Length: 148
Length: 148
Image 1 (cartoon, helix red, strand yellow):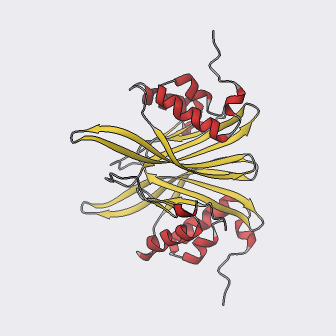
Image 2 (image 1 turned 135 degrees about the horizontal axis):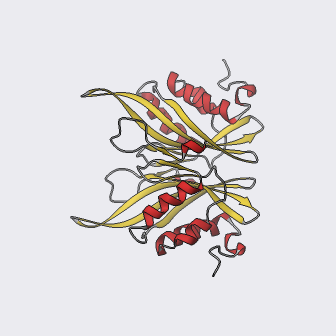
């Protein structure tokens, strides 16, 4: 049986781990998605407009539901990075092309992703995604982004 | 002129700093609110359904707007704590009593607050607040909270 965990080198940096997280959502690869998460009962996940999932079992259940509807065409953009020792905090604009009654449109979300360095590489401990500016066709304004 | 910064002892722990943050919102104390933030150009703040504010100047401007409408009767509940070295990540249920056409109601938000330990005590570097489960009168379900 193939290992469900990617090689450690694949999560050598927070950016590596973040890339795996979004690629796993894009390809609907549940095992790869869960391998991104820290094996820590304190992990937290909030999907847009949803409840808070605390602990690995409930995070797993929440993503089973999400992926039961198929892969998600989600694209991380405008990644803003904060780092302190072995903790990385990323603020990400998530872009999801959607189809509406009026034709193609784009859903925008703001996500906060937190990673910590472990013996198994950088692992996700928190994912909090929420709707961007309501009813906006263009990307939500990123106040202050000219500084970065 | 009195100092606008509280004594260091007031931010000796992440919980102290979080308490000051919510008390400053409750009392409309802008100086106290800004004293909670790290003096770091990478700080990030997302208000519910709003844009992303990056950098201390834009975080300050966003809270000027928020408090220009007066103090906010906001109450942190169900605080879930993650910690890694000198970084603390809190997931908080924010409760805000509101008045609607149909009478008193409650707005619920999920917030992610991140604090880092600095020479000036524990300081906020990220605040991301978003609407809880839509149209729900009771507190949003906290999946897995029986574990914690």
